[in-house]
Length: 314
Length: 282
Image 1 (cartoon, one colour):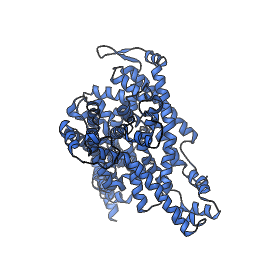
Image 2 (cartoon, each protein chain N blue to C red):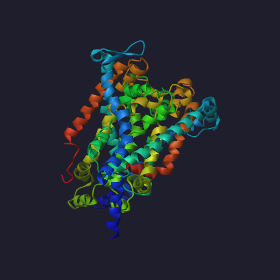
Image 3 (tube, rainbow over the protein chains, first blue to last red):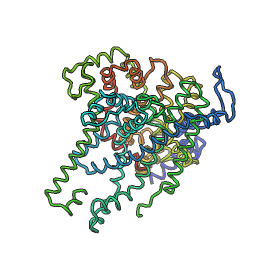
Image 4 (cartoon, one colour):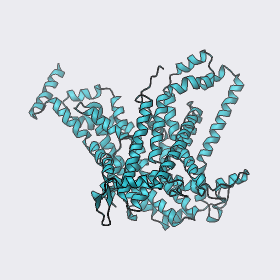
């Protein structure tokens, strides 16, 4: 009885304000999402559109913008450093993504059981992710200094040939990939641990009754049921690798794109063009190509996995 | 589960052996993972002459490197800048994201699903990709070399909104229904019911946001040329170009920069790791 009375009073309140309850809810909804929607629009949406617009302009000597049509894109086509950057980016992604998948899943399987020892192990594997990439890059650069760095000393101690990790164009990018893996593997371990937790125990029990050993259980239970997590990990790590989310900081501190442009991933080259040479239009044109590349990567992932949906009962 | 598995094939002592071997592998890998951080701290305590000695324990430990890093360069100022910016971003972001998350999960209004999808689609857009146009927009707004320029663009990200929305969807509806019947307005429901209920999620997000901003480099590097506004990561990168051969100073500075985040991590490791685990689940 009381509820009915209360409903009528609240109804009376809203009619007094001249709005129906439904419209009040609409307005409240819009007002609540407004700050975030506006912010995301201004600081993410508009920049994405603007990079397309800017790409047909050129900054003149007075800081103004001149319309130049497709000139920036033609320049990209003939710019060997752009193609070098595209190749380095692809190489970085191709080396990084599988390494993260294997190390992330491997570590997750290693510390999967919940006990106190594993809790400590998980924290230790994840700890690098808490340190800033600038510090990470500094520390690793120090450790791999030619001949006298601790890694170089250890390799010499083991009788291995001495490598110039950051000075040799054949090794610099590999070094950047290794540092990225060290930094990120704990994060992907956590994502995989979350995925492993979701696999019902009964599936393993059933497999065991059927006489499946550890390897068969991994192959026929864990891997198939881990598909959604795998999809998430592969897509996020691929997009981050192509966009240079971690690579930028590491490369900026360790190599600045060198030696011989061997670590000049696209994002580093774009940044140099914009902020060292003031070529904002040219940089924007290259950014839009990067955005298109990212959209293609995401689209391929969604196409291959039919919209990221997985049938658990496969 | 591993344990049960082994039982089918091995005797009890073999199980213990496999287990010990497993723990040994994990322990060794974990120590290898931690080694670079330990090495950083070790060098920070070593005098310059010892920088390249291969022992992890300093022979004659010293605080000189820390004193030099803190007095030779305005590191305290950089840290205060970082603290101020990170704390402000965190508080404002949590405020906005809880509001948006609440509306997207609980209120019915036309276009809600489209708005959610639009927010969600920015999930994979990372800063480096839009850095050039973003810089131009922020410059046009007159926010270059200002705290506003450091703070405002860093507030908005889809990740927090998404996690909070999922969290609110999981709360039982009855909680607010009583308040609605009492005639409470939406703001009051948000403020006195939803916000207090979000405390666990908010504390996890607060740590993540704070850490992300403390560790961010690209945006502060791009937006500030005035050293008085430098955040700590820009400060240390610049420190490197000034003292490129003095690794003992650099490792001391690195240690100072890394310590706050590592301390936060040690205290809140459960919350941090749990909230990241959720983020992968969707």
